[in-house]
Image 1 (cartoon, rainbow, N blue to C red):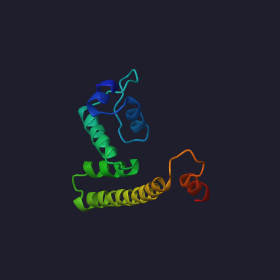
Image 2: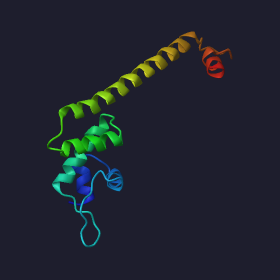
Image 3: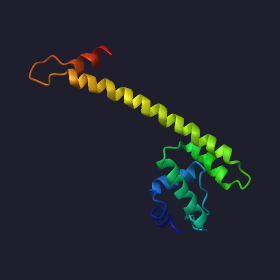
Image 4: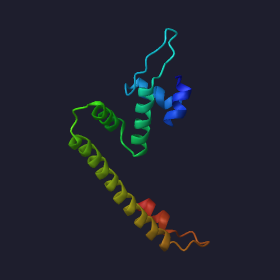
Length: 128
């Protein structure tokens, strides 16, 4: 399979596939003319990576997850640990976003939104 076909099947842009190859996440064999020749196993791995990235896993987490996926003797506890760490990062980000939202909602409520120049939003941004 060529990179265009693989991109469609894996749901990834060709540029991303080339990047994953550059950083060693996938290593498709090459024909004598230098063209990549993807096998079904690479398509499956790329779809796996697409799903992991869609869930927000970092490239390094993906590297660990792929290694665990390919290890027939892996412990599910190792996979769970990676997922739990990522889940904690998501929870931390949600808490940060909720704090930002609460602050901004309060500033919006305090702003009269009229023709006067006084604006609590700009005042807060200026004074931090």
